[in-house]
Amino acid sequence: MQTQLAPEFKGTPDGQAAEAILRKCVHCGFCTATCPTYQLLGDELDGPRGRIYLMKQVLEGAEPTRKTQLHLDRCLTCRNCESTCPSGVDYGHLVDIGRKIVDAKVPRPATEKAVRWLLKEGLTSPAFGPAMKLGQLVRGLLPETLKNKVPAKQDAGRWPTATHARQVLMLAGCVQPAMMPNINTATARVLDAAGIQTVVAPEAGCCGAVKFHLNDQDGGKAQMRANIDAWWPHVERGVEAIVMNASGCGVTVKEYGHILADDPAYAARAARISELTQDLSELLPMLVSALRPKLARQPDAGLVVAFHPPCTLQHGQKLKGGVETQLAALGLTVMVARNESHLCCGSAGTYSVLNPELAYQLRDRKLGHLDELKPDVITSANIGCITHLQSGTKTPVRHWIELLDELLAPSG
Image (tube, rainbow, N blue to C red; front, side):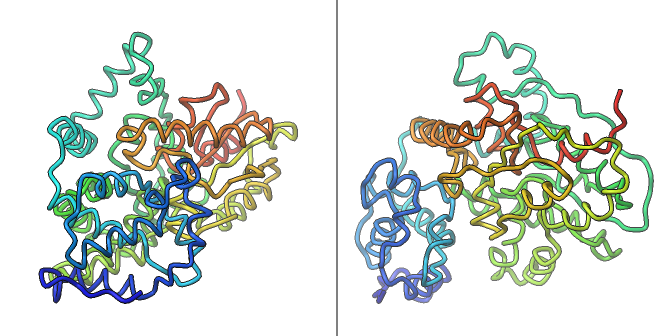
């Protein structure tokens, strides 16, 4: 696709990056078949091809409108379109550029600005933990919309105290320690059983995705630099990897090298951080091999586990099939939905707060396909997906690492 950049974008990093991405697009439309919002709304402008046209027009000098902004807002950034694009169009990075440009030109209503500010500042604030504890105390009194975002209080269990020569860093995350702390402690216990020590750098906070994707890209980059600074002494001491047990954080940290490529002070270190970053599922083959002789109990043969692969895992990180295959190797009965397992569940970071109508339609559509498996438990690999799906079903929704942790724990 040929693009004639408007003078204001010629020679700028955003303009050059967008032009390079657009050049790959042949406008074939394969992406519309796998776009969740196009499936729901049937509007070309609510699919990748239409949004690319909108962004191309803006880059060529057309004045964006509130309607342009809304069509870009309705994109989940699930990147399913990237998995089906035969030309390798880097849509995720293009939509980041497009939203940044459009938001600079189209003012948002005051209430919308306030909600987005509260999300990007509140979710990444030290006050989030106490606020979540208070919400859990009064959870039964909360209206349904708020209760959906406040999971029941969870026991974190013990953090292992043994030291090992093999060490990995783990990002605790901005909301996970308060909402579902057992995911982190279960991860540390499983790695400990495999002879690997989990190290958390307390100075590392949010991965940067919340602010970055709410178009505070400068704020997101500042958080990324802070994490690099917190991790770098451990990197220099030789940690094996930086492990992510939230696939949304994983896809972001794996892109630090890309996002900070133009930062002379951080580009090299950001690239190294991205190289070291692994989703927890990438360690599963090694974990299964190391832990199979150490299982304290055998999996219940009658237990049916449904696995929902998050978009950030299968489309963002391009990791497919590993979790269900490896857990099955341990004797668990693990299944993926027979229909639309590639489609987003509607969580998508803060999307379910900002676009609840579409998010809940996608949630219920996803749960309908998962329920066909008649699962005893639904598992996933991202806290956003877990929380969002749990709000629509009585079937327990958990992180897959918690199941592995339980197999290692003595009964009784």
